[in-house]
Length: 173
View 1: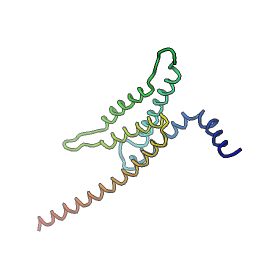
View 2 (view 1 turned 30 degrees about the vertical axis):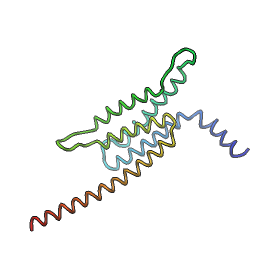
View 3 (view 1 turned 90 degrees about the vertical axis):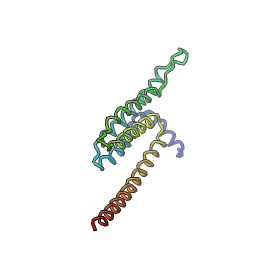
View 4 (view 1 turned 120 degrees about the vertical axis):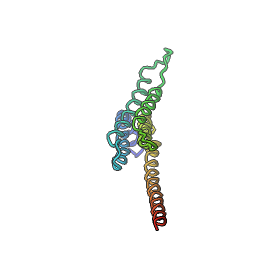
């Protein structure tokens, strides 16, 4: 038995029958990863929220795809659109995200949390549809870029504070 035969056997006999479960697992891990970042910043939406959003989105996408396969009959004229439920996920995520956004005078809070809930839903739909590579890549790139943007925001905020402090000291002297 060569390596190709072993990989083929592993894929066909182990991975394929349990692929739905792997999708849920991958989705939960990615949701946890996203939530961990938010929890480390003491944000209200954290580990559980993002894990629930990614897993629920994956689950609904899986149900939609597999029910379309099972319930559609080729010669009956019955056609099902497996992504119709996925579009409803997006609507629900918009509603959930809107509930996170708070306006207090001129300050708006919760936009990043709302965007991340939307992103987590996209991760769930993507994994549910089987797009592992692009979803994992998008999650890693987003994580790296948000860390980088956080550092840049801190740096520019420090410069503004330093500039503001130096202007105040010039005015008072």
